[in-house]
Image (spheres, rainbow, N blue to C red):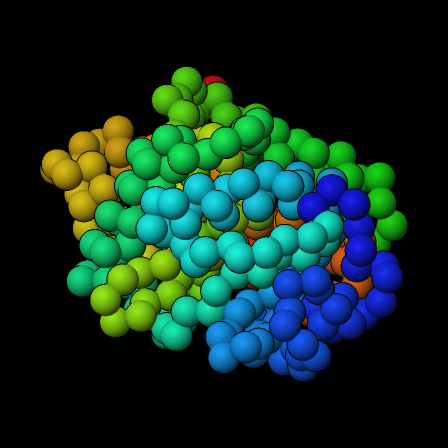
Length: 299
């Protein structure tokens, strides 16, 4: 997946002419992706999902690494099997399952299952991952986004300097960490429930990181209240929540919101996907400022 084939036609055309099909196929759009294009394809009595997308250097997305991570996730029983790949395309088995919503994630019984799934990702993935593995350090990601936003056309906020200072303060507050292998994009839509098992999709941003980032990212993306956050932490760590856990979670929630804000701002400036990034940016910036104001950061 290192050479592009997406430019050889529309994403649907690229998906239709992959070499794995037994005959002509009609890709059906699968909505939801904002950094790739997805299709459902029926072929030879089986159903598959096709992901079409090139490397995205602006976001640190390397499809070859995504492929290796997806294979490792399947070996752990966390993600569907990859049955075929070509440059710019990846084919996985379709899972007949319900996509979770934020309301689903916040339910205690589901939240405990999700926490256990995340712990398996963190502890089991390294045993199966082959080849070079990326690091996803959210503060470095934010630094890159800040530089991109400041040098690109569009509507960069007037306060990029302020956000840069916030990023540095958050990184100092987090301090040293023990890395685990994280997913780093824990939106509700990336979880499937087939009635027996939970599945985790979309490994584009996966890499070594702090466990607290994944936990905070999940809490932030699904707008959990303090009680739900306590359930998440207690289930993940298998012990009572300590003050340090809550401090790290709240700090990383701010980092996650800042990253999401800057990601969207860069998408505003560079993406051709039909999505209201401006509103997404403004909403997440407001949430970041509110959460950041509530932190007690040491200088």
